[in-house]
Amino acid sequence: MTTRGLTHQRRALASLDAWVPELGLEDLRKYQGGFHAVASFRPSINSKVKKRGRALNIQPSGIVDYSAGNAGYSPINMVSVSLSMSASEAAEWLRKRVGGGDDTKPVSVARLLTQPARRAAARRSTSTLS
Image (tube, rainbow, N blue to C red; front, top):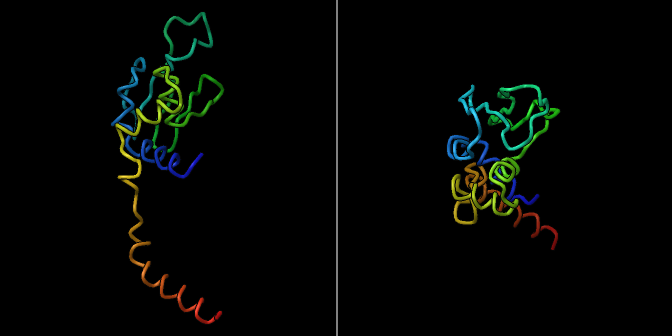
């Protein structure tokens, strides 16, 4: 996965309210910092159970389906399986809801503050090599 892809994933996990309710997941409920829902995108593990439980846990720390052997999902995978989209379509769908892309690159304030000092140090080290 590219750095850009990881940035989208992190941004999506940090802003669950912006996209999870739009997935149409069955019995979606707020839980702690995220959501619990029925994994309605996959068949039931046990055909004898009439009402399925909320085993899908969507949290800022990650997404896990406890009924499917603790299967983990990335935000893009979750959108892809929930809305029957390709991974690239799911990534675009997420980007529209949580931002990202070249126009909204996250900027490290610490890096900006130390950038002049880094440039000066780099110039000093290259001048001593000459």
